[in-house]
Length: 278
Image (tube, rainbow, N blue to C red; front, side):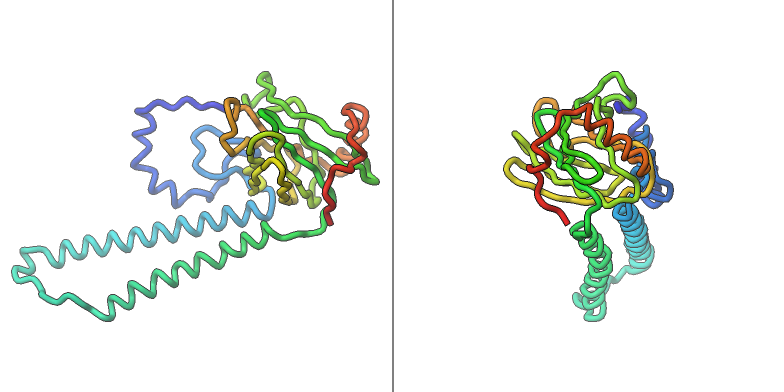
């Protein structure tokens, strides 16, 4: 989606940026797609995305508190130690208590930030048992999706190209990746030519698609709907025209889609091209 913003309008918004940071994440942005003038993230529909938003909100409040504290110190020093109030300035150069404090306090702040950060990384790198697996291949400049043959169905592949006639513009594809709601989906990502990046903001995940390498991520969507993302690695001339669309549906709708897709799309090598996932 392209949003035209004039320079004048952008400059007028600058004074309110600091105040907006504190409110960022208090109310999420659009459901599965960006909205004009959005300052927050998209509505999170996975546990990981919710944790990322909560972590971001906490960092903003922490940054605001530190900024106000430093501003207060500056104003107090200007008022308390100005030339009029202190015609004879102090001559000392060291204060042990202050030096210890400004060393220990930042360390404690970093530790407090590191704990939830490492927790997020652990969640992202976890390897839960998969309910299904989809292989994603980045091309110049479109995506391919392969569904392995399972008891429920699969054994087919299809391409997803930009569809400029659909809305939101430049975020829709002719075919969509479809997954069931409430299931752990593992996505194996690679590329056929150059480095791409499969990114889905509402899921809180982004992973590089590298030729000759198979990367893996997972998500568990908790809400039905259609969610949009884009390639997030500068991959060439049409990098901006590689949208990602994931449609999350009910178990029944997913089973029906598998039956339709089996006849609609050409079959792959019986799913043999897939790495084994637990």
